[in-house]
Image (cartoon, rainbow, N blue to C red; front, side, top):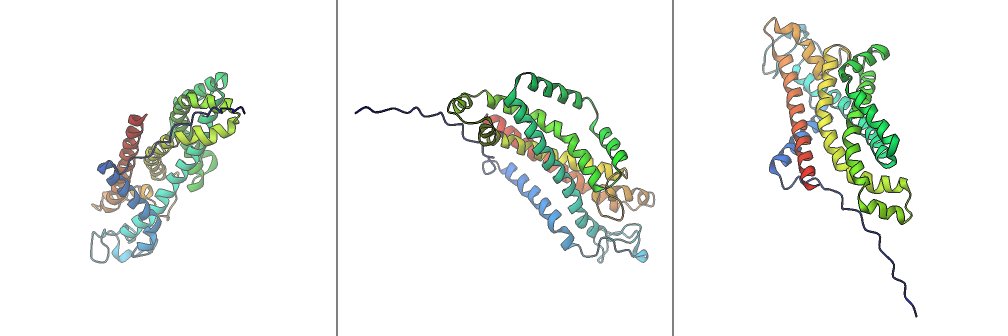
Length: 287
């Protein structure tokens, strides 16, 4: 009786895991970023006053027992507006990062898999896009489609997509050349299945690290556009808009609104950027 020996297809490398537990600083940053995200979710529920409630008699006050961070020029409680504004300040960048990560990763994996002339064309297009200032494109897009949350999110999502695609494409191209990919092709697996179940799974840590860094940058750009009056419009509460509203109060010696809103932006951007850079360095060391 004859026996047939089946050759096993080499298994793909195990996907990288984010080493949060082995790095106390990384773990601490993750906790801070998680707390900031929870603030965005539950902040409006914790606000002591309605964020749009005005009180002219209390306008421009410094910190008091009734208003812990003071009030703005219309008598609105700054703490309440900070807490309520966290939701819009996080929602906009969150959607931008999600959309750009999905689109950019799809372009990157497709380009790496097809290769050849198509991959070269994608690289040239990405290089051309990088030559154009992103904030200028955002201003033009908002000028065409109008001000507001939705137009700004769409514009910035399209701007951030090439950044994600450029980083992920190089990683996906390296993964595409690994021996286990050729073995999977010889085993009869379709290109779609290899890309979605193997290549994509192994580039996801890079996508996550890029998304973390991109969130901080998106929050800064989102706030900057609102500061210029091209994003979220009054009377909504949003950190960039609060910095803009507080400019006129600075001349009267009332720094609290711009100071606290600007501080929240800086702390959030720094925490997410450092967290993303730390994750990227960990993943790079593992590769």
